[in-house]
Amino acid sequence: MSTPLLQASGLTKAFRHKTGLFARPTTQLAVNSIGFELAVRERIGVVGESGSGKSTLGRLLLGLTEPTQGDVWFEGINHKQRRARDWKEFRVRTSLVQQNPLSALNPQMTIGQQVAEGLLVHRIAGRAGAYEHVAAMLERVGLSSAMMTRYPHQMSGGQRQRVVIARALVLDPKLVVFDEAVSALDVSVQAQVVALLRSLWQELDLAYVFITHDLRIVRHLVDRIAVMYLGRVVETGDIRSVYEWPRHPYTRALLASVPTMDSTVRNIEPPIKGELDASKISQGCSFWSRCPFAIDRCAIETPELRPIPAHGASQHAACHRAEEFPRSIAPQIDMVTERGTASQKEMAL
Image (cartoon, helix red, strand yellow):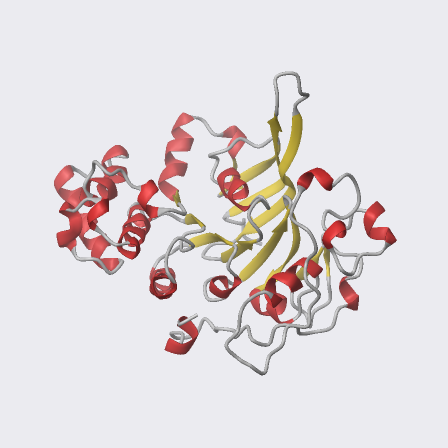
C-alpha cells in the first residue's frame, strides 16, 4: 500500500481566550482529534459553517499553525521532525490560496513581481527566467502576460483570484489548500474559477484540500468530502455517496439548505435550531442541542466517526442514528462526473 501524500492523526488545536482583566481564561477546541489522509492527486472538500474549524485545519495541515496535540505527515515526514531546510523544501511543495484575493496581494507590488517572488526567494530561477515562467503561468490561468505590470487595484475580483492561483501554482506544488477561494466572488465569476480549477487539476500533478461553506460549488471540485462541526469531522465519504445518502443530521440540513430553481422540489428536512456555540457543549454529541433527531443517548455519549454501509462505498458518520435516515433528501443537487467537461448548465451553479 502506498504512503499517503498527507496524513494527520489526533490533530487538535485549542485556543485560550480571556474576556476580562480578572476573568479566568477559557479554552476553545477549534480542531478536535481529527484523523486525515490525502492520496497523491486526490481532491477533498472540507465543508461546514463559519466557526467549525475548517480554516484552522487547513493551517495545521500546512504547518502554519502549531497543533496542541497530534501529528501531521507530508510525504512520510512528520512536521515535528522538520528542520529549517526541511521546512523550506516543504514550502516549495505546498501552497495556500486565501479567501480574499485583494487582501492576499501586496498593493505596492506589480502582479509579475508577486507571482515571481516564490521563484526568486527559493532560487528556482533567475530574474529573467522567473518572469518568463510567470508569463506562462498567467497565460495558463487565463490571464494575459501583459497584466504582469498591473497592480492589484487595477484588476477585477476574478482576475485577482486567478493571480493568487497562479502564485500558488508557480512552484509546481504537490498540495494546495484552497481556503474559501471563491466565496468573495460573484456567482458568474465563481463558475469561471471552478472551471479553471477543474482544468488545472487535469493538467497538473496536484492534490488539494478545498475548504468552503458552499455545497453548490464543492460538488464540482472534489472526489471526497469531510463535513466539520465544532472542530470535529461528523461525516466523510466519497462525494456521490454523501450527497445521495447523507447519514448525519448536520450534513442533511446543509444539503437541504441549498437553493433550487426546480419548483417541484420541496425541502421537507427539519431546520437546524439555534446557533453554533461551542460554549454550550460539555458532553455527548456536539450537535445534539440543535439536532431535531436527538435522543437521550446523544446528550450523554459522544458518537464516534464510524463506517456506515453504503453500497460498498467508504462512508463514515458520527451519529448514533446514522442507519435510520432515509436515502435521499436533496434531489436538486445534481452530480457532476469527472469524465469530460461539465456542461454549461451544471457550471452555471
